[in-house]
Length: 354
Image (cartoon, rainbow, N blue to C red; front, side):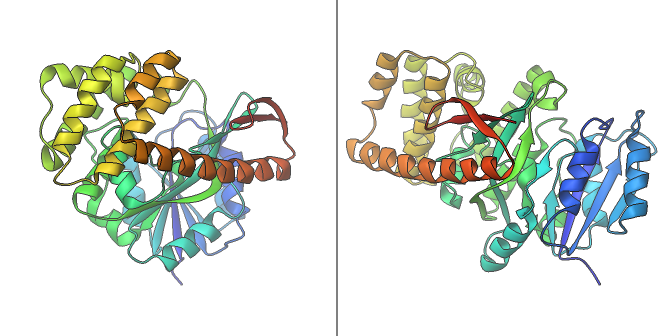
């Protein structure tokens, strides 16, 4: 019998967190799965750990690479081996909450028009837990618009139709942004995506992650991907706007409200044909929210907010407040179930520790 879900994972020297990650898959309330693990030429004890798990559980299938192929190629290999109706992603350092696969399978079965979905999550770093993605919109129109300014989809929290993943695959020319490229390609093909507003994964943050070690390469790859996405659905950005987009919109390293206002004006005009104007405002509002978190002065944030439609602002702030409250309440219950205690943060963004 073919499994309902193929969970795919690629690992390179993942001995530190690998056992906990695999056990979180084995402990799922949904049992009809296979776990395909590509060992990408690890030199630590990863191979031994995987061998032990494969002996204990026949649903775990280990495939070693003869040479180091890196993440996108290894994931494509796992996709080609997958036999499930759906393919779920999992990283070797994250933790699935026990009902992740059960809830994601039910969601995909109930929404056959959705090709791919992700979920809410909690982050953990050095024993400190926090909620992730609280208050964000979960619908396809919002996701395809948010892809203009950020990546709203958590890669290791994804589940997708196997037929779609086998057709599209990851772009192997990329080294650290293969997920963004796939999401934008899906959006251009009108493959619908969604986010399940339930916290189903603990996403680990640490210094060895690709995202924290390859910033310059990320800049180059993101710009290449977004030039294609913008070119297909809007129009190409000039060189000056490209420079600000990378540092001041996508990565918000150099938050500049004046340049943001110029970009926002351009985007609203360019997006009229293919995007809903209120959803574009939502995406821009999310960038401003990130500016606020980066410490941009309140007076500058308010200045930028004055350029938004007042009716939109009132509705969006009310929607976000209600949605964030629900998301935080769910995270607080999960923290309680995990035996965590709230130690810092705010009512809107609590922080937990063991």
